[in-house]
Each structure stands twice: as C-alpha cells, then as structure tokens.
Length: 121
Image 1 (cartoon, rainbow, N blue to C red):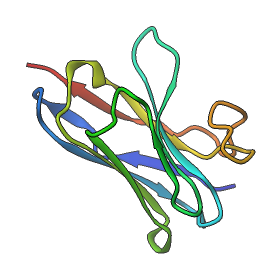
Image 2: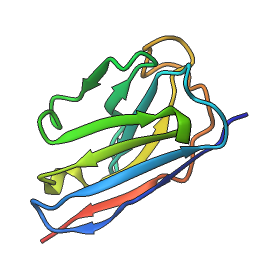
Image 3: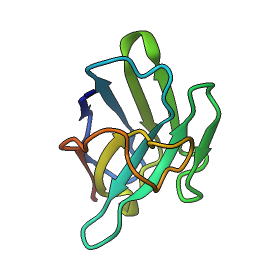
C-alpha cells in the first residue's frame, strides 16, 4: 500500500506563495493524482487534479493561482500556490481516485496527515 506524505504548508500573508509536495512511498506513474483541502467545518474539496497522462483540472476558486504538477521519477506531486487568499486556509491532502477521474469517489490510498496552510494578515 502506497503511503502519501504531504509537506510544505505554513503561515503566509495574503498574496503570498507556498509550494506543497506530496511524496509517495511507491510508484504513482499510472495513477491520477489530486490535491484536496478541508477547511474547518467544511467538506473536503478537490483543489486540483492531474491525470496519469497529464490532463489537469482545477477548482474554479484556484484557477490562475494554483499549479499542479507531478514528477513520477521522484514519486512526488506538487501544488504551487500563488496569490494566496484568506479563503485558501485549510489542511491540504493528496490522494488518488480508485476509479479513473472519480475524484470524489473511493480513494485509492489512505489519507495522510495533510499539511496546514494558513493565510492570515
């Protein structure tokens, strides 16, 4: 079972940037991978997804500000976050859908600890 470890979160001011990393313990090259976030009192939501053949989709709220990428050789998925807003504050997780691009269906892997992103003035 592949384990996922998220890192790179922190405290930033509005307008700041962070780069998150999701390191996998095993190969991920054949999997679609997604970054999700969960803010207090809210449901977990998909922020960005990247398929095994590099098709990308973003939540409307982050389009133009966030960039997802993957390095299969390093078994790592990244999320570059620019122009951060207060509303981006959440715990960020990565995972893979069990079935195709069913991002909100069954997850392929267990959920990691996530990485906290706090945007505050």
